[in-house]
Length: 388
Image (cartoon, rainbow, N blue to C red; front, top):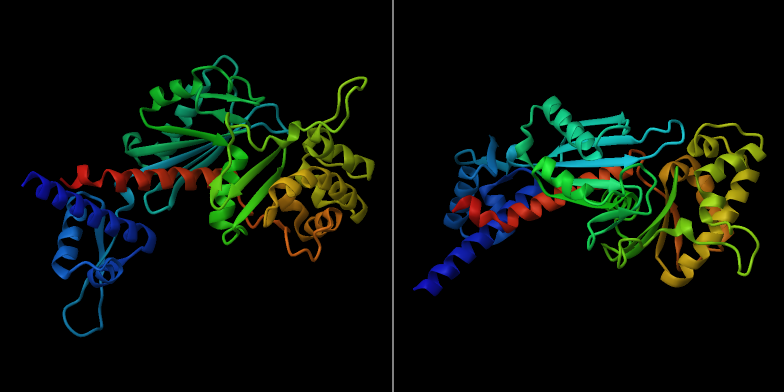
């Protein structure tokens, strides 16, 4: 009897998880829609919807009209059942103060609040600064902080989950041991950390030009330089979270006199600004410089980019290379064509070069996508606790 009861509870949980998954993916559905999607019987579908509604995970949003018979109730996932927060921390060239972007999403993926702040870390705790920014956005949206189920932090560096520490980073205080644990304690919710370029790749696959690619790499040009590697929808992060730190690749041969240049020195943000000056272009940001670029400047920049991509393409043979970040956005099709010519991929049946399809803040959007995916997965996984 215990075995049968356990099987019945498992089956019920599976049915409820499947129904909630369809409501999250498909938006508004009637009982009949849900029955056709799940293959459940009419009584089982009605029972599942009743339990989801009582648990606060589903709501009736309206009724059908105009057809024969009684009007059918239309169900949807309850947007207020849970919330996700994305936080993106980065340095800027224009100001020495880091920029902190925060976004709050409800369970259906609607952004309820969003802001970007220039934060001053001198004399203050970074964990407290991030907590205050999240609390502020929740207050603006009228959302209790305790309803937030997941925070995704995007950092301009590498995160090692084994040491719970951020490295390869230049933002003051971001590499401090115990920072992530302090943030989790301050917020009282799970906090995930990932490299900002990895999260931009999440957004590119979900919202941009990489949706149908078997595999792709995303080369990020902005204040810094980075690479994300997506293999069939799974990001390659490496043993210590440092996969894709392409900017540190040196370009000289040993033995040599003096420091060897690396890719940061030839295609990083400061290098793009210096190249623009050589071509008579004065700009405050790398993206602004490329937006004004002459064909000659674009050709020279593309030749430099091709140096970094040569190894990436040879080793990974990706189906797609996405040029992203503010330089990729500003360069557009002209930069895309110049890089394709410089890398010899024009007309190639292998790797294709493309410019990002995201005009917004890809890092913040990717962090929001990642946080929301975790919230939904956690709700579905623990659904039996909510409906029992």
